[in-house]
Length: 469
Image (tube, rainbow, N blue to C red; front, side):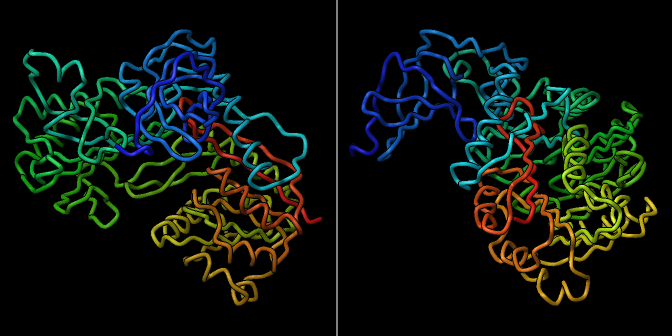
C-alpha cells in the first residue's frame, strides 16, 4: 500500500473549527489538517484517516471521548445517513456563527477585501419545514444500514421512496419523515409509497433501468397551493390513472397534479413533456403583493420566507430613488427584477435559460409591471457593448450568478460600464470573493450581509454592496 493511501489513527484529537462544505477541522500530531464529516467543533475524538494528501487528511471519528457543548439532538431519525442536513447535530446559534465566519474569511482571505462593519447574519425564523420544493426517488433496492446488512433477520420490503445516499447515484434511503418540507409533504410521500406497495407497482431500478415509479416532486407555496409531479419510467395507463386518481381523492388540497413519462437514462425533466392530469399546470407564490407563477420546471428560491428577506436586503442595498436604470444579471425568472421595479425607472434582466425568461415575462405581465424588459442569452456573450448601446447605461447593476460566480468577461464588462453601484448576491462566498478582488481597484465594499437560507446545512447566501471609489 502506498504511503499516500496508508490509513492512520490519531487519539484524543480536539475538533477546532468548522470548514467549507460542512466539514469540521482538527490538527494531526504531525501538523497536518484533518477534515472530518461526523463531528462538531469542541468534540474530542479518536479518528481513522481514509485519505491522505500532502497537506491534509480526510478522516472519520471512531471514538468520542468528549461531546461538544455546541451539540444538540438531531430532530430527524435519518440524520447521519441522509446527507440533506449535515448540521442538525449543531445548535442553530452555532450554525449561524460558522456561516458568518466562513463568509468573512472568504472575503478577506480569498478576495483580500477590506470589509466595513459587518452586519450580523440574518437567521431564519423557521429552522425546519422551510423548503417549498422536494424531490424524492423510488427504488426497488433501498439502502441498508450496517446493522441490517450484518443481521440474519428477514429484511422484508426493499422498496424505497426517499433520497440518494450522498455520492451514490443508485442508492436510495427510504424516508419516513423529512423535516425540510411542511405538511402535507410527508403524508403525500408515505401514502404514495404505501399505495405502490399495496397495488404491486414496480419501483425503479436505476442500474437495470426497469420499473414504473421513478421520481416524485412536491412543491408548496405560501398561498396554500400544492403541486405533485409523478415521473413514470414507462406508460402503463391503468396503473398511472389508478395512482393519480388516488392522489387526487386522498389529497384534495393538491391544486396541480401532473405526470411525466420518462424512459431516458436520467431523471432530469427539463427535456420532458409535463402533462397536467388535474388542476392547473402551475402554482403561485406571493411576495409583497407580487404573484409568481411556478410550473414544474421553474426555478424559485426554495425557502420562500428567507428569499423575501434576501430580496429586501438586495433592494435596500441598491438604494433606489425611482430615477435609476437597473440591470439585473442572471435574472432567472425575474423575481429580483420585479421586486425592485417599483423603486426604479426601468429594470433590464438578462438570463441564459430561455424558459426562465419566458416565465419572467409572463410574471411581469401578471403583475402589471411595465418598466421591466427581459433578454435571453449567455451572459458573457450577450452582455456586450452593443447591448449597452441598445438598452442604456445602467446606474445600478444587481448580479446573482450561479455557484461558479461571474465569468471574467462579465466582471470586466461591469468594470468597463462602471455603474455607480453593484449589488452582488451570491450563494458561494468563495467565488464571490474571487470576483470582488477583480473589482477592488474600482469598487469599495461598503455593506455586506449574510443570509441563512438553509438551516441545518452549511449553505449560506451573502449580499455585498459595491460603490465606486
